[in-house]
Structures are given as structure tokens and as C-alpha cells.
Image (cartoon, rainbow, N blue to C red):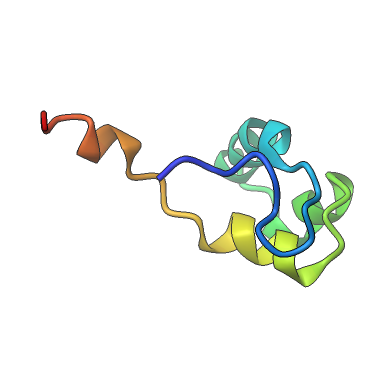
Length: 64
């Protein structure tokens, strides 16, 4: 739902890169190039960004 602060596998801090990644992807840049530019070289970190689905806006509608 929310991008984690650290990669689950290697522990690299990646949370601060999420907004830049989203902005550049929405502008039509290639995701491979963006991930390389952001310094995400390990496949665990790359898969975290590529497979993330932002559901926070949908879940926030419901109250516990």
C-alpha cells in the first residue's frame, strides 16, 4: 500500500526515491532508465518499485 522505507531483501533505503520514480514514469520515461538513474541496480530493489501497487487512496475510504 505504501512504499517501504527499506528494501525487504537487502535493506537499502529506497523510500525517498518513490516520488521521483512516479513523476518520471508519468512523464513517459522508460522504467529501466529511471531505475538506473536512481541507482537501483539490485533486482530486489527494482522489483519492489516495479511491482508496487499504490492502494492507499482506495483503502483510505473505509474506516475500521
